[in-house]
Image 1 (cartoon, rainbow, N blue to C red):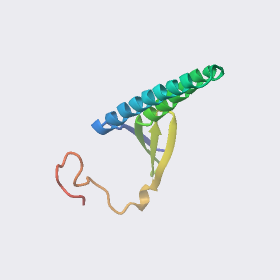
Image 2: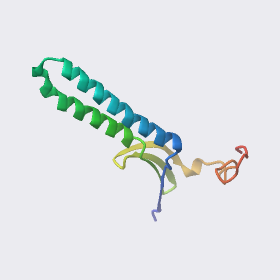
Image 3: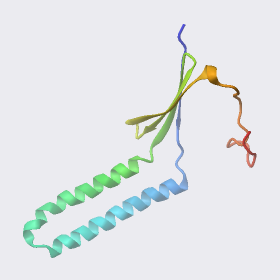
Length: 121
């Protein structure tokens, strides 16, 4: 008989992750502003490329911000544990596959987020 257990955990956004996202948006706006000034200096025949450059920087900022949406999926199938990292609910990367029969020990880890200041076992 086959067994299948799946558990998904969404990574919480930390203050530093939010700060990085704000910095990405600010950097994109500064680059767009600089590109706009450069296109004002260039001859008028180049102005048609300005919307393309602005769209490219907006798209790049969007892609960088999407990298912060991370989930981890734990799947136990017939004694085999798979851990996957899912980015932006689109890109899946297998981090590790472990056969549960090869475990020598398992249990609660000391120093988990609920145990403040404790060391790892």
